[in-house]
Image (cartoon, rainbow, N blue to C red; front, side):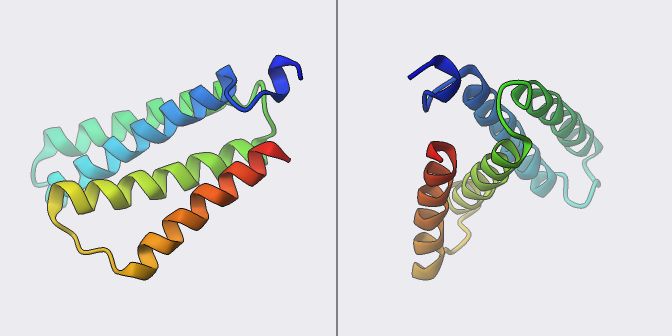
Length: 112
């Protein structure tokens, strides 16, 4: 198995970094209170831009469809868990099942 087909490659790490930046941006948007707190809002926009830069580097070494699906899945997962942990947002049992399915789907997609 060569490096381009291993599960953890530089491209995967870049996708994870892009998703982490996206999650931080989403959580900052919640803190910005509809851009009433401009610093939080502008920082969120900056992080989204940086996330896209990381995603653009990731697609150099993996298919766009796989990178984008993983980025979106990790972003949804991280934002859901961040809202739950930081803002006390309630997650119903079906949300937990959905997150487990997201992880399984992203794993299957990457291994395909």
